[in-house]
Image 1 (cartoon, rainbow, N blue to C red):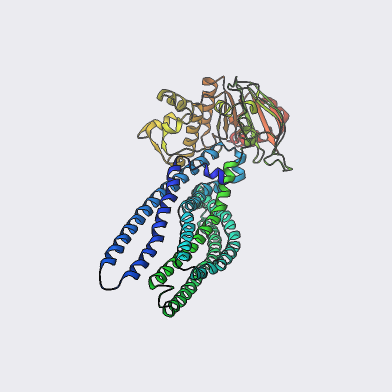
Image 2 (image 1 turned 90 degrees about the vertical axis):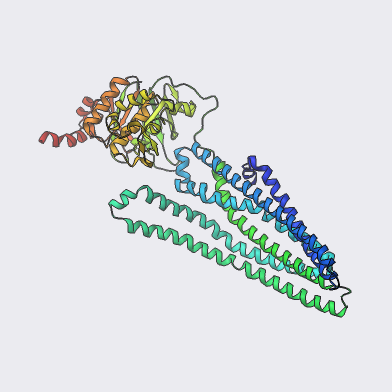
Length: 578
């Protein structure tokens, strides 16, 4: 884990090294200052101001050097930690881009968001503490111990005797707090999931007047995080009184024993200045231990965040491009050879079972089936969004697992059920299909998708700004824009997953007619709920329970008097009566 995270320091190695070096200079200055103060106290006789000028000047120089070193350490530390966090987020984001749908399902979207935001922030804070406080505290402790022993070894043992008490207290606090920290991160995921669901579905929430329910759900998740944090803070809070108690006891002992020693030995064994410096070193020793305990708690709290981040960075996607993968898709022919698929390899339930299908290049294929019949699952195997559990899927005569993933997915355009548009102009959104597309090409595909007409009516036409998610266009307009975006890829296979459900039947028919005339060589797969959307297809597949139960063209399926005929009759009955 440390090796992986250390590799993310990247171009900020210089600042990472300079931070503890400047911290070393600051600590050295701060440890010399009490010794100079002792000299000043011991040399002040009241007869002359020379000791004040001499040692005062030295103290000013030491304090100035300490300030410069401290400022440089803080500056470099901030640069290094923010740069480290930037690199970490970048690599995490790039890694997530490589994930398959199965990988996203494994981690969950809300958990990935937490890891990219809160977890990285925790690690950034821990990293800064490691290169600054984790260096400062041990150095301050060691230097102060050495200086204390140089002044008076017997008195310095008072500080040494306190250390085991502090260590036992710290370890006990950590052992009780760590399990709570581990639990908190999982509850953060639940909290983020609640927020993400609510924001994404805010229109549904409002239309069903479920604000109170969502507020209650959020409050519950938020209360669980708050409760665990309070439990952890109550335990960690014990750290301060333990530290303070040990510090005050040490100071009392040093003051009492030191005062008696000065009086009884006439300041021959211990001077007033030396006792003053011992008290200062004692405060530095115990303060450094207190600071070290804070660093220790922060590092251990962040350790769970680091584990979660490394888990993502080390995760190998279940879908990978093969070495020397096929770099060209010959045509849009598709073959399903005895395909079985499970979302979870250990699951007993099969989402798809024994699928055998032969689609010629350029054909139009319709897919019908009830909710949960695995229509979407079937088409996701074509562009290898998931891998088959058994059997094989061939596109252009080649097993999809043998293609370079980018090449395959460039050749297969999918317009999914959940259409997504991004903030930006219509042109910018459409160029997701082809970043080099000309204005003429954009206008042409929009005419094919029956989108040009409503775009021309907009104030800025193709330069009209879309809000995030495309909320300023209707559902039907959004679907047509997504179809146009897919067409810009000039795909060998075009898949429409119920992506004309929000357009009227006339527009749906015009889209299908344009496809037949303008892209005859592209294989077109249409998942629909309306029989009218697929009845002119070269072949129609009816899925039920993850299996193909009927297959053929419209006339052949009508003669079977099966599920297709039942759907057709139910959808056309009302029209005939009218």
